[in-house]
Length: 613
Ligand code: F6R
Image (cartoon, rainbow, N blue to C red):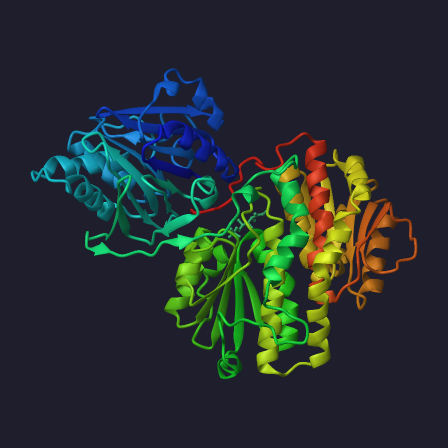
């Protein structure tokens, strides 16, 4: 998705803006641009392709302005081109604007502005914004220090849809205005300088102190002063928040790719997720949500709602919540949930899972549940992200910044935190076996060590990836939680290797998919639940008989039954085995992508955080 960076201070803005854009490259984009303001003149430079292509532009090194805005664009309205990339300016070149989000009524606004004499150079929705700001600015006869602010506020009131915008005006060389609605924006505060970004990692190396903007807020940013307003320009107060992410966590630290680094961080990140919530022989600690026994006894259903990998994390933990709480759990795709009139009332608990906390569908699904009277819990990795501000309660995964587009450490942290939540509910309700709860708790505490063991034995998976990287289709099979891991493994492979792949519940094989199995095809089997071993083994034998090459991920002592490769992982409680069994499969996808020479961290067409529908 698009990225935004801004700077106002005493230093040259251009290198800071380009550095920030480079740190946002992981979000996915097709073009980039910057505007800086100097001597009452706005320079506007943009280019298609990589951020570094900005350095090919004549004069870029001569931009000395100390105030500037910048953007990476991921095309929505109009193809990737120089004209369509941001910043966009109004006809008189007085205002320059970058925008994330979608202006739904832009056709209407364009017609209105065209009638008022404005013309348009691009096919974007964004170009209406600077012209609309100019329209209100030129109508305002009061030439005081709030004229710029009033024009932006009036324009924002006309915009339907979502936006995070930065605006500079050549008449106001010391002021930048930013605003947001349904699209993330943070302000990093420094001494005699302020930074703006759509994502914290873009400016984390400059400051750890942030203001998090809420919807319909407008901000005046000077180098040494920040004024916050609501949409009607009444002043509001905001707290400065300190974010304890280490800037080094946003670097590759010697790894070839962010994805590999993030896979290898998982022993650490799962330990961080567990944090002080779980200590041996003590009840699981969720002081931050503190749901009473009466409340938990009153609810009759739980929804886990999310998209993509985060939804797979929900699927992995559904069986544990149902086992320990005896409450039916529905895992739903946020984009489906929000439009299908789900049955929700005050006896429903809705849990929303989102690494970024900014996924548009997940956020909308959360808002829907609130209007129906349900209690909501947000599970997010990003402090202060939008879903955390909407939900009744928030639980952070504490996995640190995830930069690679393909999610890895966020998934294992989500499964870990949801498992802890299931244990907490189970302990409060007190209806399941104490021994079972204790076993899962003990096993969770041992996970970081076991993850490390998996990560120290990666040669076989690398070798198997080398054998099959030219395949056209790869199948994943599993039962129970192993099926949920199959779904995640298949998604990972598709995303970064572009190999077509399908995941099936192994028992479904005979109901259709087995027709696809032919000589030489690759099938990956996941077998970790001791109750289901013989069933899964039979299914794998069925595909071997039909000529499939097989890779098996298991923690069971399987007899050699003609498998091509077996990856043994440590035993654990079956309910939490996805946290271990997914890791070799993350690596499988990674090494296949590398063998194919692809850009692992930035797969085609994908964005890290999907802030529009
Ligand atoms: C897959 C992946 C996506 C995200 C999905 C939800 O590797 O990263 O499927 O899991 O877009 O994103 P969040 O968790 O930010 O809501």
